[in-house]
Image (cartoon, rainbow, N blue to C red; front, top):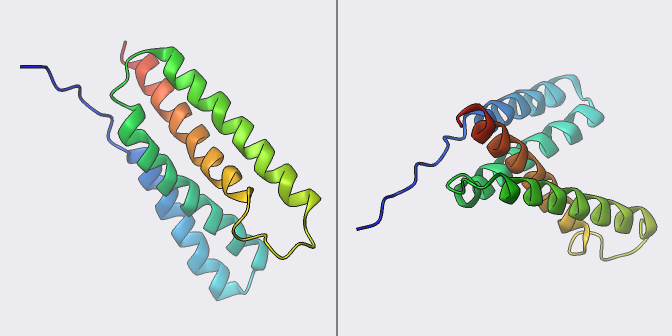
Length: 121
């Protein structure tokens, strides 16, 4: 019988999601478009980070978390670069911009899981 590795609970992601949700509500109240966009991104990255943490948190090797951070940064840079180069295109929604969203969530998950592993060595 194999031992089940204990996964980290996603409390930081929940805090970011709640803060982002409060930002969405206040942006709607004050009609602030920039706050709305930032808050939606915070919620999106928090949810993606919680999903990625399901797979990353049982891994004890620190290099796995460092690689996740690097892959997330690369995905974010690529997706953002693609978006900036193709702003006038018609296929913005279903495009490589998704790499930026996934990359942001992966960076967040990697940072949270790496700090958790370093703190609980």
